[in-house]
Image (cartoon, rainbow, N blue to C red; front, side, top):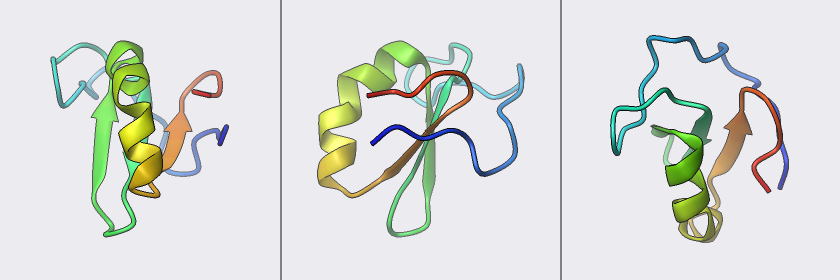
Length: 64
């Protein structure tokens, strides 16, 4: 499910919702919400995000 950003690019001000590190990945949920993750947490939660049919966008390289 590789994707690049289709929304506004992430900036240095965007932080991981889990740990506060720089956000590298945006997960857009089917319900319309979005979560921002550092690469570490994006990798950790990728399986669950896929199960939730989240659209995963990365600011650099594809997540999976």
